[in-house]
Length: 414
Image (cartoon, rainbow, N blue to C red; front, side):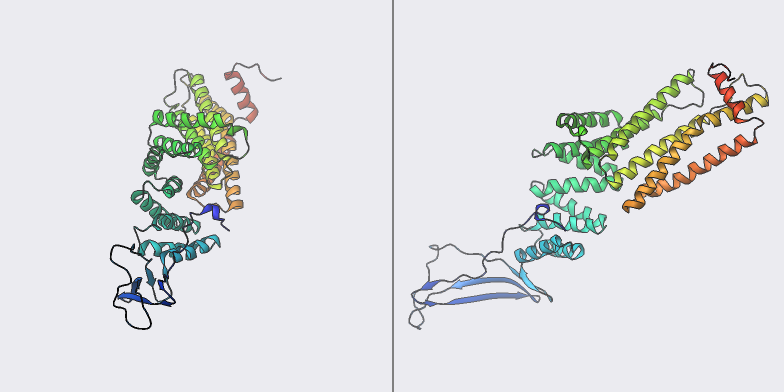
């Protein structure tokens, strides 16, 4: 159930009747203008009366009394009312969690008065209502209309934030970057809002391959986060989660530029750098999970598991060294590699299992969960292939372990 703090409430319905009195007598004349079956105007023209005889004197002299404009009453087959009344009813539906009815009611308000005073709030609340029933495309359309048509309104900042989150979910990185830049151009950002905006820009730049620009935005956001001491708390905001997920993305993509085929001149150094980048990225993704948001947790969990899977695949492309001249030596090398790096598949599989289990508990059903399921099958297949390859070799795992120890310069086990 929504609370009033979540909504942008609109002013109360303006008075719809006015009386002009002279002595003890009052007379009102209602003027109605019906067009296309809809009552589009309602006004009261006030005239003075005396003794039941038509007055020869006008009730007021032109220019001596202010003109009064009454709100338009809109009539449909189902109801009638001013936009203010309709707004109150729509807000009530939203507070009651009647999302679909509220969404339609807010859309109706915008269609009646697209440039009226209630339009900004109706666009925002309507977008929020559509979002709650999973209609993210419709929600995003309403947020964008608010952003484009009412740039300076207070509601627009909320629309920018929610639109950026939907763009991130939809992996529309170009839109995410644009929304982040638009947010940063506003003078009314709080620290929380600025972190959200920097995270959006950092994520957009990272996904477009501009790692330097991404790290600049991410660094500014991290500075604000650390100044507030938020990393010392438990649960983080979604905005903070986005910052650290973007950091993980940059570190992951930079690390995966280190390949092993052809074999690097200093393989040990290259492997050390690749593993360190994996661990640094994993730490960033783990921080993003502290938002306890199922979507961000699914994204981060998939990325971590996929990093281990990709590292294993890249390492297994390493060809036997030139010193392995015989078939037996080549088989020994390949078997030793399978044995040594099979643990990467273990780690990747466990992360995918945890991610899928989390999704089942929370009802998360985004594309990231589907990717995790596909990766889970791929890793399990690679794990089974590695075990089958080891079983076919004319060596025991103990023989292969001794070969690994010799390669590492360790003494033979007793």
